[in-house]
Image (cartoon, rainbow, N blue to C red; front, top):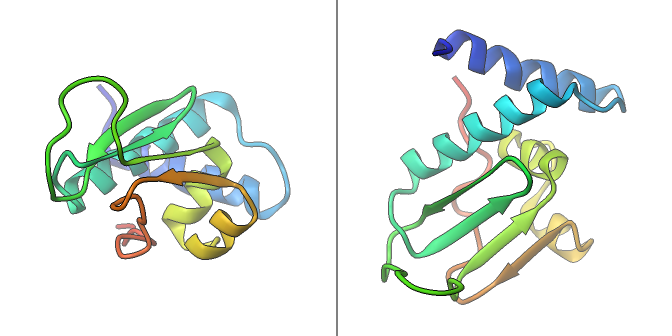
Length: 120
């Protein structure tokens, strides 16, 4: 099992690479995405929205009606680099949606109230 330090180091390394216009290493990016998704699920507990960051992970979060079968009515999907940038506050939610970097559907699919995440 990896320690919280290793996970936060992965987030820092991914952000550093993205800030320099480079692609983060695959393992670093995967760890950063999963760490940030887990943080979102912890800070916005619930099961009304599914946030997908293929190929690395997905979580259900945000208070509201629980989804149990089929495709969730409230979904958010984006690429890993966009997720890391949004979670860290390097990219604004509205801009990401307007530019087509985030695909959000459903009445509860706006994550702007939860982003950026406070990184420890």
